[in-house]
Amino acid sequence: MPELPEVETIRRDLSKHYLQQSVIGTQIADPRLMSLSSLHAWKKRVHGQTWMELQRQGKYLQVVLASGERIVFHLRMTGQLVILDRPPAMKWRMRLRFQNAKDLYFCDQRRFGEVWLLSKDQPWHNQHLPGPDALNELTRKKFGEILAKRTTRIHPLLLDQRRISGIGNIYSQEALFRAAIRPTRQAGKITKAETTSLFTALRETLKAALEHRGSTSRNYRDAYGRVGSAQLLHAVYRKGGKPCSRCQKPLKSIRVGGRGTVYCSSCQR
DNA sequence: TAAATCCTGTCA
DNA sequence: TGACAGGATTTA
Image (tube, rainbow, N blue to C red; front, side):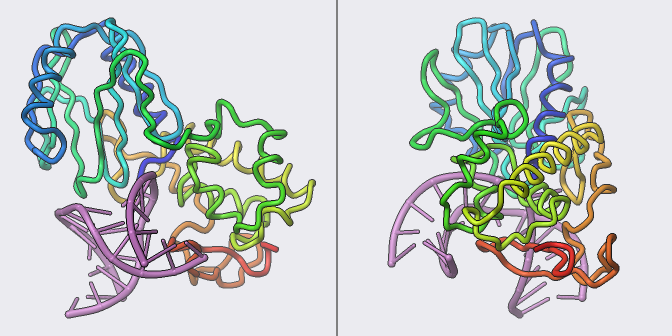
């Protein structure tokens, strides 16, 4: 669910409420999220620690505590972090109580989301270094290097967080449509001009989505529990069979790398 | 490169 | 009832 624009929207919302605040109580409703022994350690290390910074890398959200230890969230498909003064209607997995702020609820229908507590210098990625953040770190030059000589298809490559972090199945498809490139094109065979066009398309797609506070197709909510409006901008995502907004021919729906993918076979080459 | 896996819910 | 869903890892 949440890709870069959604996670960034949540990060900004949470920053307004919780910076310089500290957690004073933690409840776990889903033991899958955290074991009892981990919760014990969590309480000792997190409670009373001031939230100094909220950072994002790709789809990861990181809270830097005064101790230098960090809380890292990944929302996966359906995770939500919502600020409320009473429990939400839906099931929640974790609740954080704050000294001088409203409670924070971690809700997550499919329960794929995760939370970690990391010591001062412990990396939050296990084996694979995540690639440059699609908005904050990726440059045209780096993008060219990532695509060069690669035989993999462009859509799965854009989704590979080890190459570039933050892009998911919505914005990859939308950017490819905007750049008029087929999702199945071999990455290494994309021309210089097309690479520039795709780089620009990615930035514009992600920025526009951020300005619209993310895309809500179903589960996504911001930290106030509100839907985003970037879905109104979608040209292809989940629009298979509908007429292309540019040429009116029906959009094609295929599977690429196991992901549902929609494109225009006439506009995208 | 693809399929299975972790889950719950929706839609045809 | 089966297919599919915004993610990512592991296995074959």
